[in-house]
Amino acid sequence: MRKVIFATSCLAVSVVMLFAADEQQPLNVKTGSWQVEYIVKYGGLTPQYQAMMDQLTEQQKSAMGLPTAKTLKICVKQKDLNKPWSGDNDCRWTVVKSTGSELDAHGTSCRNGSKGSSDLNMDIQIHAIDSENVHATLRGTATIQGGNQMTLDGSYVGKWLSSTCDANAK
Image 1: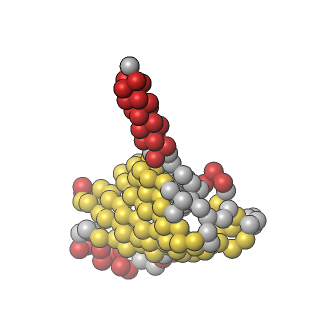
Image 2 (image 1 turned 90 degrees about the vertical axis):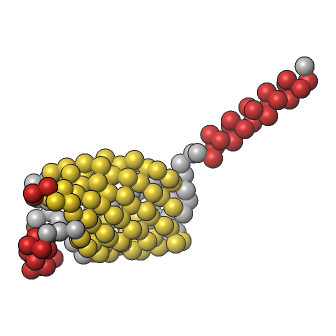
């Protein structure tokens, strides 16, 4: 009987430890105003489409709703510490992993372009270097005109500015 009780106790402790290990933890960074610098590159485009993209300015790409190199001020609240800081793209995010220093997420049905089509899927990995600095990489794929596959590779660097958010922060 003691062996059964001991074995049951060990099993119960193991199950509790598995659930505790799987618990998502928010990033261990400060809340408030952050400056985020994005850099985005495209690949897999047809030669004609690539030539057109190469001719566009950052402002034209932005006006079309395409991700571009830009600097934003964002307001990070406590509720934002366990989800991606990916801008305004209306993705449906699934957090794959979230610890105090790492956050990995997969986004589906992201808005792609000014018409807001939802054929862009993205993966993002955020690394908290310390409580005031983060680095992230993102990779996405989308189907564009003619059924061609486009890839999006990007990164961003975030730096904490202050504990209060200004009116211009997103």
